[in-house]
Structure formats: structure tokens, C-alpha cells
Length: 334
Image (cartoon, rainbow, N blue to C red; front, top):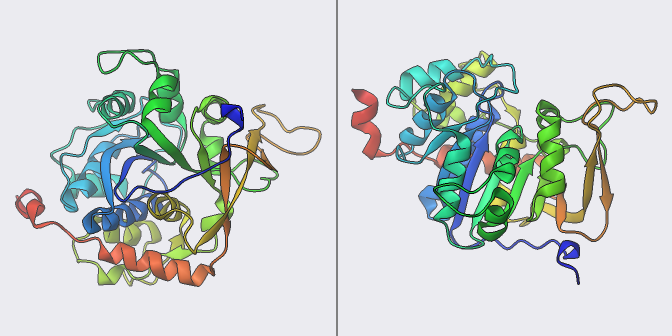
């Protein structure tokens, strides 16, 4: 069998090593996803190698770094894209940054996401890293396009092929998105197109339809009162009662990265194509419209199996499980 025709296969390692790539800007489920990820880290099931932001909106690095620090990991590298594909109008980012991220640089002076990606991958074991993208695909596209540097003699595609086990991406809507593309694909359609056609490892796509009916965040009052994720949901929903809940697109992506399909989802293999033209086509499909062709292939999509309410309950419990680390008490209370 030709290497490009191999079947999709993903069995998580006992310790899943993750690069967390997020557009922690407008929507709040990015913060919920980071809480879920740290619940696995604190269980000893995952390790966060790096956190990178895809939207250079002013204080994304401080926001991401502040949440990392709250959960006890202030030294996890944080990088940022030079671009800002999203609106940069987050209702929570600056407040979280000012309250929890004062020891981290702003987006103008922070390390680039590309440098962080290449440094972390160069020192990783072969076939060991899971890249999770829950935002625009500009960082991953930049990585694939990169040339050799001081961290590795390999170019980006070679480096990903050697070090990355799988890319788990929240993006697209399956089997089709109409009349226009899903938000993360639409943010940077050219980057998405490049990743689709050049990524040398399998991609698992967690589509918009997966997290759409799974609402979480409404158990946040069980978190510590100073939890930044709890605060982010309060600010995003303009609600301090704890009742407000948000769809769980990004949270479900993290669960797959660490646990695999489990009892939550079925897997369908195939291939994705997207329209990159910035105009409405005769078929009435607009920019970044995607189509999925099921069949043999190295990529796959999630197909929901478990009821949404059960998945939501699991995710809510994981958000609450992630605890503030005593290591950070002095840092946060200075």
C-alpha cells in the first residue's frame, strides 16, 4: 500500500504529549478546553509541551500563560502568531491577562508560535506529539512552510512527519458546510487549504456539528472562586449565576486527543476539500465551504455516538477536576 493511501489509525499513548494551538480571543470554549486538558495533565495522562496562540490580539499570551500558571505550569512555552485572523474583541482576554498573566509578555514582544513549535518538536521523540488546533490554521500552515533553522535541519513538513503522531483539529462541518465555511476554516482559508494538502500525518477533524449540541460551563460555580476559566465564562456570558453554558467545540477536541474515540464517537475515514474562492459560487456555496468524501484515507472525522447530555456531564466534571496548583499561590497573590 502506498504511504499516502494508508488507513487512519490513532491509539493514544499512556502519556499524550500535546501542543495546544488556540485562538483564545473571541469565544470562551478555548478556556474550557484548556481546563479539560489540565484535568488530564493532573491525572498524569497528558503533558502540555507548548501552548501557542493563532490570534495576535494584544494580550493572548498573557491570557494563555496566566491560565497555564493557575494550573501549576507557568513554564510551559507560550508563542503567538504575527497575525490576528479573528476580531480581537474578546470580552474576557484582557481581564484574564491583567489578573493572572502579569509575568508573561504581551503579544508584541512574545516569542513567535513558529519558533515555539519548531523548538518543541525538534527535541521531542519521534512520532510522539499530538498537535491540537482549536482555532485558525495559520500557525500549523506556517510550521509546514518553515525551513531549517537553529532548532532542526529539517524543514516543516519533514519535522512534522518525523515527530508528530496526529493532528487533531476543530474545524469544518461534516459531511458538508453550507452556505459558507465553518468559522475556524473561514478565519484563514488559505492556511486551511495548505494544511489539508500538505500535512504529512493524519488529521482527525472534529467538526462544528460535534460540539454544537453539547453545552458546558454551567458547573463552573463548583470551581475555585478565583479560577480564571470560571471568570472567563462569567464574562463571556455576562452571567455570574453559573447558569450560562456554551457549546463545546474545543473541549471535545481535547478529549479525543487524549482518549481517542472511546464510547463518545465513531470514526469515519475519508478526505476533505474546501473552496478557497472569495466569492459566492453558482452552487450558492461561499468561501471556505467544505465537502467530505468518505472512504479509505489517512484522515478522519468524528461521528457522534453518545448522547450530548452524557458528554456534557463528563466535560463539566473535567472542567471542575482541574485544580489550582499550590505552586502558583505566591505568584498569583503578589
